[in-house]
Image (tube, rainbow, N blue to C red; front, side, top):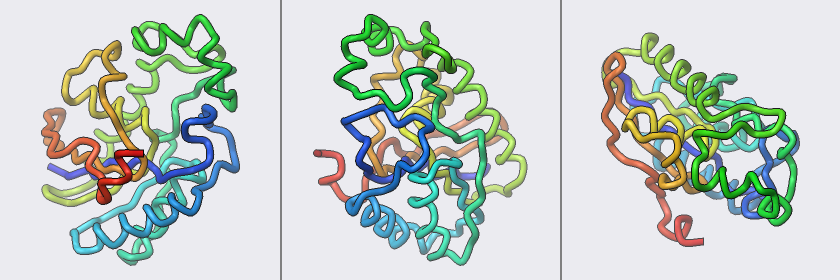
Length: 204
């Protein structure tokens, strides 16, 4: 039963302003870099066997201090990439809220496809397959850090809790938060969801 620490990347200039998606060159800001260092300091005492990251810069920049503190290299895994938001990628949130599809995303996200992109079932499938594959590589009680994105973590949590995709918006995942997932085959236990080291990070 491997123990996965599902980490959302740290703060960056896109949060609350535009939908970054898979856009390149979205980097951690000063607050996000501090969050990554705090995560590294918090996790350094655990028997962590691997630090795995989404391919995107903001995730890698969160993973790197953790890996360095543990003497590990960051492994990149495409399964943990952000949801493909298609034509919505890079658009400002104020503009997206005017789109008729926005309300559907909030109220019944499991039933929509992002224009030119993925639907959430496809996204969830690849995230879960990635976790199940990793679970075969590690021994019972091995810790594995997986740094990804808000929706990626929410999709994993929803799957293993049996939460329907239409209820995805009920799950909060703050920047630099940790959700703890223990896997035994396809059965799972969630030890924590959306744990933040600094309480102020969950209040902004």
